[in-house]
Amino acid sequence: MTAVDGVDWEALREAARDAMSRAYVPYSKYPVGAAALVDDGRTVSGCNVENASYGLSLCAECGLVSALHATGGGRLTHFTCVDGAGQTLMPCGRCRQLLYEFGGPELLLETSTGVRTLGEMLPDAFGPQHLA
Ligand SMILES: O=c1ccn([C@H]2C[C@H](O)[C@@H](CO)O2)c(=O)[nH]1
Ligand SMILES: [Zn+2]
Image 1: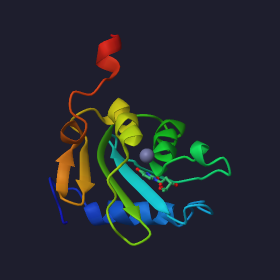
Image 2: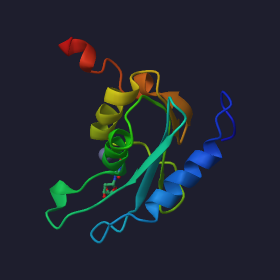
Image 3: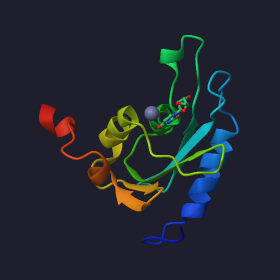
Image 4: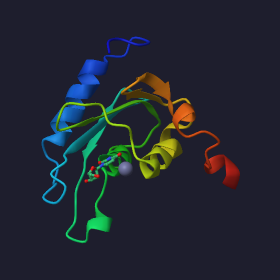
């Protein structure tokens, strides 16, 4: 995938691969890296971090959301996620919800079937608007 609305998806994928190189995956052996652009131009990223109590493992998107806030907050505009085979990963259901909080339905995600909005991938999402 190349430029969509002027965004350098390859640079974003490279940031995701860089984060993936620090994944902690002794159990699944399935490293994941995620990266996103923030509306102020920053790039934030994360990798998966597993746990001996398997269910406590953190997806790469969890680290990304934490990094977003640890480095100043803002809104996510563009997102990509890669695995160790170099394939684009579809975020799991929990991570779609995590991303929705900070990107909303307009967040653009690079997926295995092209660039799509989070609204397409998590329709009728529950979100902050329901608590307003
Ligand atoms: O959206 C996803 C889906 C899975 N994983 C990780 C969790 C676990 O460490 C490994 C295998 O499920 O992949 C992510 O980081 N993000
Ligand atoms: Zn996940």
